[in-house]
Amino acid sequence: MSADPRPSLIRGGLRAWLAPGVRLADVAPGGDPDRLLTRPDCEVVKLQPKVAVGTITTPAGRLFVKRYNVFAWRVALASLWGLSPALAAWHAARALRARGFSTPEALAAVEVRRAGVLRKSFFVTREVPGALTANRCWQAILGEPDAGRRRAGRRALARALGDLFRRLHAAGVYHNDLKDVNVLVSGPPGDPRCVLLDLERVRVLRRVGRRRRVKNLMQLARTLGPQASATDRLRFLGAYLGDGGGRAERRTWARAVGHAAIVVVDGGSIDRTVSIARRFTHRVLSHAWPGHRAQKQFALEASTGEWVLNLDADERVSPELATEIRRALVDVPDGVGGFAVPRLVAYLGRWWYRGGWYPRPIVRLVRRSATRWGGTDPHERAVVAGEIRKLRAPILHHTYGDISDHLRSINHLTTVAAAARVGRRLGAGQLVLEPLWRFVRAYLVARGIGEGFAGLFVAGTGAFYVFLRAAKVWELRVHAGAASATRAEGRRAPASS
View 1 (spheres, rainbow, N blue to C red):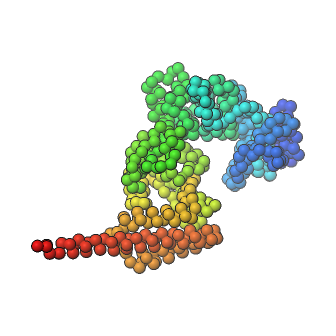
View 2: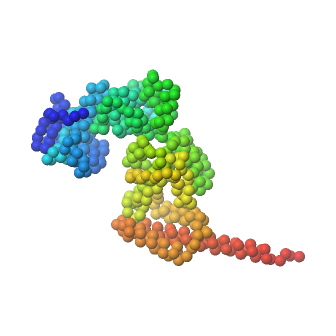
View 3: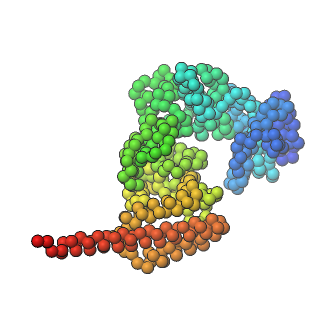
């Protein structure tokens, strides 16, 4: 897709490509689409440093305005000879429509340059009436009270998505982020119509190779997978392969694509954990609590996929991490056994980037066949054979509900940890120097001081944790010594006559 040499309008550093009958004032009042995005009646859909999306009603109808910012120098310099994202989306919309695919109606591509360097660009489209993203459409179908209509809706949507992917790849169209939120679904549940979004990511190739085809199928399987059953996924794959796909070919593609299978291991909860988990997966296993390490080993052995992401009940996957994982697993060398993921703690009304809790990467995404769970309770860890690579996006860790919960957790975890340390050396270093260093490291070295009283509290509780752990080791030794003395005294006592 080469650059269009004839924009509809040039004004200083502004260039605009307009659909027939569309005026610049309709999509960019005063020559600046930001005036639409910043109006009080604009509904902001996405607000990120690099991309912002808003929807607003104008004399031209209900519009979606997508703004792309440019910050990195390498991207800015590349823009001297490359397309802006808005113009790439403009060309993609034309190319897709020429090949019979539905897209939102493109009204304008507007870009602003200084000395030829791109500063920002805007892509303006008309709203698709009544459309939902594929994930929201699937949720609506699952919420249908009538079982017959629910089954029919699931069947129709799975087949419509499979047919969309088949036609895209057959036409040489590749979208490098073809997940559920980048597909709009409109029309009645029994006859859904699929519409592509994020058009700047579209490339029209001579041929879409197998690796790219697998990547697209994996992207949808991993985003929509938790809401789709095995039957839904087979219907999707059957529609994708078409009439020429026999049983053997379906099996080959199913192994290549895989699907996100959720396994929940419950250690004996007394709340609604099990019933809630069963809304998302049929694999909810009850396993009496054997300890942290043994429970994670049980969960690992219960998994069936090649790659396993281990999460505790108080952890969440950030959207950025989900995207990074999907990209990382497209093509992993055989020698890589796992990925280390940072954890970002939410506590006391803030995200803890300071104080020593971040990033502290921990191996959680592992190749199942190359992993066993080791370490000592409560600080178990994945022991992986092979290279460990690092991911940048974090797991979100909602570790403590409040200060009382924090103190209860310290009491419990130090009891478990002390039992595993009874045989270790205990002296002034463990009772005095280690707690002191923990405080200094968290409060000063890791800049917890910048969090005010909250930073002081977290540094203090970190120091108290290691002191209390050492104190409990001492207590266990005292009790063990007393019990040993009692048994010895019993053996020495003379038998009564």
